[in-house]
Image 1 (tube, helix red, strand yellow):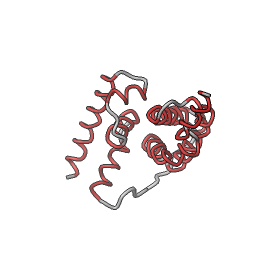
Image 2 (cartoon, one colour):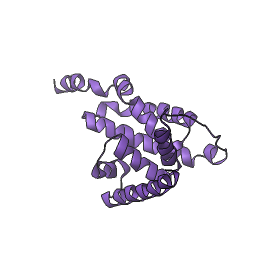
Image 3 (spheres, rainbow, N blue to C red):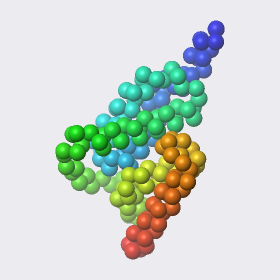
Image 4 (cartoon, rainbow, N blue to C red):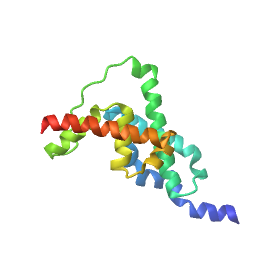
Length: 164
């Protein structure tokens, strides 16, 4: 009886429901980390393929979200260390994410940050995660996350101050 109750209660965790609700979040994080539309498409697909193997173990909505973020980070890390990625050159994709010029400048500067800073900036400001939550997602200490946020903010402050 408990197993059928569990199945009814975790409909939110079904891959098709998770994809509908969280594909945009996964795509945006992968784009922030890879800076490539094509790579982000591949990562999105890989994340949900991996998720399909484990979805029945998801206990809550927060667990689902954290799992998808962790899988996304792992997939982008795998992509960055793959043979193919190391032996190809990136094309400059001049993607206009927004029409607002000042917002575009900020986004461009965020995308120029090293991957560890881009990730924490995205998770903190776009996804709204606290330092402790980001530390759990990235398997690091909260002090490391605070340091990355501080350094990223300093870099952005200095580069954006020059522009404006």
